[in-house]
Length: 486
Ligand SMILES: [Zn+2]
Image 1 (cartoon, rainbow, N blue to C red):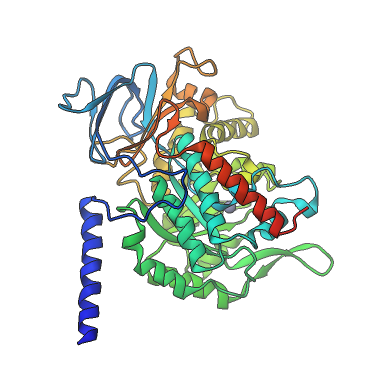
Image 2 (image 1 turned 45 degrees about the horizontal axis):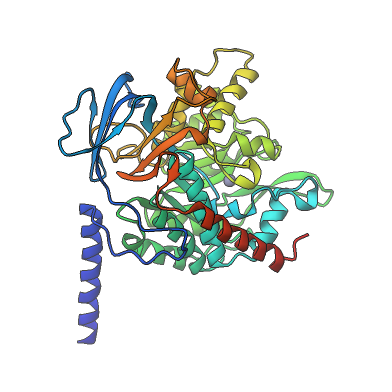
C-alpha cells in the first residue's frame, strides 16, 4: 500500500514537471541563494521597432529598418511595420538587432580564478586551477558560475555550454547548475569529473543518472539541457625522460563514462588534438565507433584532413577558443580548413583565467584576424561568416538550432541590441563589419533570453553586480586561503 502511494505520488510529480516544460509555465523555483540575484522578470509582449535587423537566418537578407515582435518567450514575427497590438515598444533606431551570441564551451566555475594564471610553470593555468579547484565548495561553484552568467548576459551571450569539470560531490553540480537557473540563461550543463580525478577513475555514473532522472526539475522550463564533459581515450603525457608521448587511457574510465552518456541519450564533449603533442585522437575514436552527431570536439588544433572528414561525415562539431588557445600556447586553431571540410565549427570562451573576459565580439575579431593573417589575405574570412559561427553555427553545435541562433518566427526569443551610437563603433556604416571589427561587450544595450529582458539600457535587470562582486571577491579570498596558494 505504502509503495503504491509512493509510486503514484512520483508519477504525479513527474507529470506536473513534464506539463510545465511543455506549456512553458514556471515550476516553483527555489529562492535565490545570493542576495545579488532577484527573481527573473516575466516574459513580456515586446516589439523592437525600426532597428537594423540582422536575423542571421540562412537565406534571409538584413532589414535596414525592421521590427522584431516577441510574446511569452516566442518570436511572433520579424518584418517591417508589424502590428503587435498591446506590445511594449522598444525603440530600435541606432541599434543592430540580432540573435543572442552562442558560446559552445566554457568552464564557468573557473571565473573566480580570473587573472590568476601566472607567468611561471608552478603558477600556470593547469596547476593553478587544479590546486584551487580542489578546495572549491559547492557554494564556490555557484559563485563562479553566477559571475560567468552575469558576464555572459553583459556581453550579449544568451546560450552557454557550461563545461563543468569540477564536480567533487553531487551538491557541487547542483549548486553550479543553480546559478544557470537563477540567471535565466539558455544552455547545456556538461557533467564532468572533479579536476584532480585520476585518468583511471570514471565520474559517478550514479550521480549522472540521478541528475538525468531529475532533469525536468533542473531544466528551468526547458532552457537547460544535459550532456557530459568527457576525457577521451588517450592523453599526451610526459614519459620518464620528460618527453611528451601519447598514451591510451583506461577503458575502465572512458568506456564507462561514454556508454553511460549514450545509454541516457546525452551528447558527449571532449578536448582533443589540442597541441602538437596530441594527434590522431579522432581516428582512435572512430576505431571504437565513438564518433556520432552528438559528439563535440574542442580545440582540435592538430587535426588532420582525414579526421576532419570523419567529423563531417558523422555530423560531429568542433569548438575553437582562440583567445585561450593562444594565451596558453596551444597554437593557432584551424578555421578555414574546417569550413572547407564542411565541419560544423563554433566559437567558445573556454576559461576566463586565460582569456581575461568573455567578450564574444573580441573572439569574433580574433577569429577573422587570425585566419586572414595566416593566409596573408585581407579577404579570407568574411565578417558575416564569423558572425554565423557565433550564432547559428553555435546553435547547431549544441543541437539547439530549432529554437535559437537566428531571429525567425516560432523560435525562442533570444535577442540582443547593439548600440551603434557609441564612440568605439560609430558612425553607422556596414553592420557586419561593425559587429566584428568594432563592437565590444559594453555596446550591448539590451538582452532578451527566452523573451525575458535580462539587460536593458546597458544594465543587468535581475543581478546586482555590485553585490555580486562583493560575494565573488569573498569566495575567491576564501579559496586562496584554504589552498594556501602563494
Ligand atoms: Zn576547455
